[in-house]
Image (cartoon, rainbow, N blue to C red; front, side, top):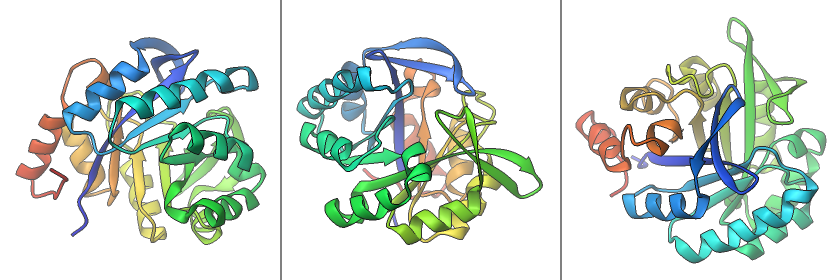
Length: 252
């Protein structure tokens, strides 16, 4: 059985880690490089950095952040937010990122997924899907940091990005983001069953039980969490011990 992964998420705005609810109402959570080093030492399997207010002006900030992070940690990390081209992807890999996550650019230019996968390998290309519930068993994809409806069905888009060459899907429920009342298990399970590539569940972690549910009922390959780790509610070690006690295989 493939070991499940625990991945802290660092949402970055203007060089600081922040956390909000449903992509708004941001509050400071610390220095990204310091937090990355802390989570590396704690036993996180990977890290995700998301530049949630990405723009051209902030690109230099993120490149510097990637470079400093790569110098301070040994675990793989994913960088996302504002990545629009092969040049942006190359810049992030050259700075030391292990994987890149594309979302808005993937919707606007689906060919980018295949080109990037061919150039750098499928396993290094993650497509982030931010989805909002629209009805029973129905979710719509949103772009631009969860602000703009894309007119795409989340399940169909997940299948499409796999076909195009994505090696992994970072799936965030906008409805659940930052609420701490649990992941959208329905959405997570539906996407996990629709594709053959790993799915990272994101949005809503408020307890270790929620992580367990995402990895079991939601059938996710990895669980992303922010608030419960950033503010000291739970540690990575506690999460892994809890999961092991409930029969989930996790990495040492």
